[in-house]
Image (cartoon, rainbow, N blue to C red):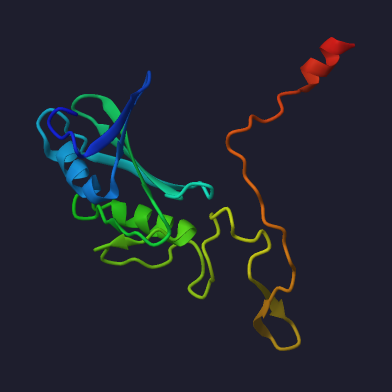
Length: 186
């Protein structure tokens, strides 16, 4: 696979249950097409697409495609990274079900998919501001939506709460002390 398309895959990782390909967003469409239609791959099922936010990286967002080959009983993960303004070519022309997943990634993270036939919000309201799964999205949101009984309608009001910037240090391990460790010390 890597020998047939060396410039499409810049990193490869093999684990016990799946293979992971890392690709540049410019080659994502070609790689997905190859994986679906090539005789030796036949990854014809798109299981899902998801997004991950790493605010400390230059290429902040990682978009992950999980594929399944029923013919070869194999799974593969294709990952690509983009910044806030770089679009990714939509995979709807290869996998029609990608439309729903790409809408979700756009709605939650703000990753734009070019050539998508219907890129609009899918989980949040049409007037929603921001993308709630970004790590820099305020926990309280930007507006408060509530029902005003005196006016008999839904009212949106800006929230006037300041919030400290949340720092995420992905390199440091979490503290591993548990109750079992404490009981052993006694």
